[in-house]
Image 1 (cartoon, rainbow, N blue to C red):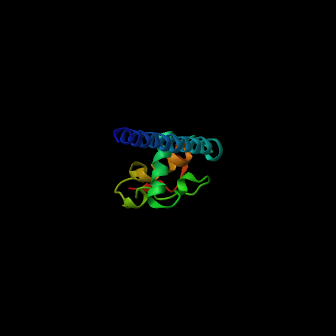
Image 2: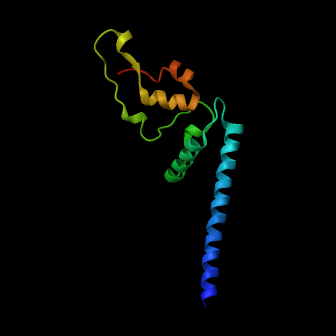
Image 3: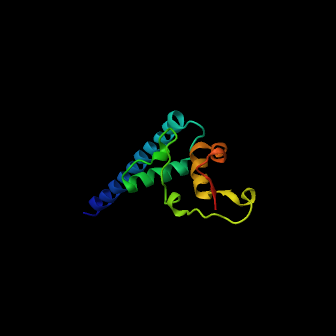
Length: 124
C-alpha cells in the first residue's frame, strides 16, 4: 500500500514538470516567432512579452500593441489617466509631452517616433 502512494506522488511530480516544460517551451517559441516575424523596429524582451501574454489571457482579448502597425491601445489605464490643463506662461517653457502617452508610443514604435508624435505633445 505504501509503495502505491509513493508511486502516485512521483507521477504527480513528473506531471507538473511535464506541464511546466511544455508551457515554458511554447511561450519561448511564441516569443521567438514574435520577435522574428512581427517585431518591426525593435525586439521585445522576454519579461515584457510575458506581461503582454498574461494581460491578454486575463482580459480575454489580444492587446493591439502586440499587433504590427501603428495601432495603439489602452494598457493598464495609462492613456485615460491624464487630463490636459493649459499652463500659464510662455508656450516653449510650459509645453511638455504627456509622459504616459510618450511611454506607450516609445515602447511600441521607438523613442524617435514618440518624440515626433503629436499625440504625446500636450500642454500640461
